[in-house]
Length: 182
Length: 182
Image (cartoon, rainbow over all chains, first blue to last red; front, side, top):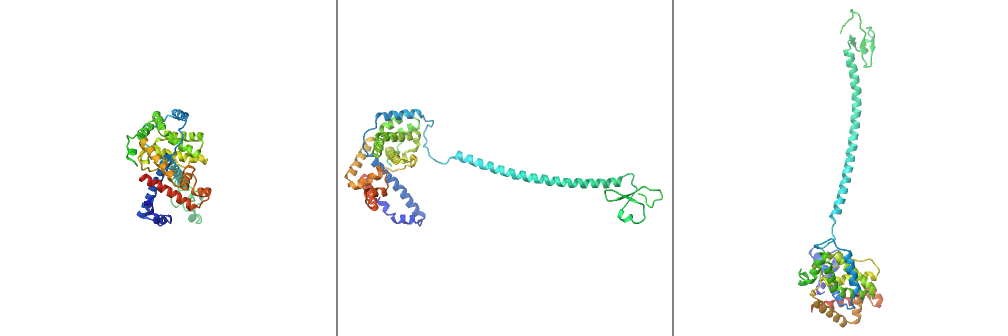
């Protein structure tokens, strides 16, 4: 108790949160030690308690109770309440799985968007390919003889032309006296 | 801490080690050694033999279920059991749930009480000291320890100023410490 006196000033500073560093550590260590010693003193007071002995039945009651609770633990490392690593591992796995699911959902959405974009591009390219094929078919048709730009020939008194879906005019086969053979 | 408390070969440590291994006979031996103290403290607090038996049963069963809660670095086994009993009895008296875990009961006991004779000698010394103490000082100490009253409740019960009660309890503890150290 006498050692406690020298910490009186520090105690006030500690209460105000104004004590730091080694002084604070020393005070806290002293307090913990002091409390343990005071508890020890009070324990001696408890030990000094006198009274009748417990009835004999209480001994048998205890022995019956422990016989019903044989302990599986043996060897006897001191049990400590502490951090439950298994529980922490379980929670960590749960969080990890949740993050994986979220990430997979994001990737799934991204891939769906990509597939849709590609499908649209393929549709456009299919149309363009069909158009190109029609142009090629027109150019390579064995019945075609002459190809003119309809815009430039239709109004010049040349032979009537037929306009197909490609936007070009295909002139009908004509007699050998045509102006230009293909 | 006494050297005997830290000695793995001491009777208390041998009993605790055997209990950790699930030895029911060791539990019976420990009961025979400490049940007079445990029962006396419980009866002193509760004043009822049935309730005292229940508290005693509870204290020993806690030790049986979790012997690792006590280890030699945490003080003398008899003093530790006495403090746990006092705390459980106060909880019962106040009809409240246990306020602290037995693993949290840390105390420092200076006198060597490994042997039964030493424990009896120290207990007699404490009793003499309490008897020699001024009645009002002893009453304040006992109300705090055996009835679990706060200093405010003691002041209200005795009709004396709060500061007076604090001073008496502190003076009583200092006297106890000096007598044990002397």
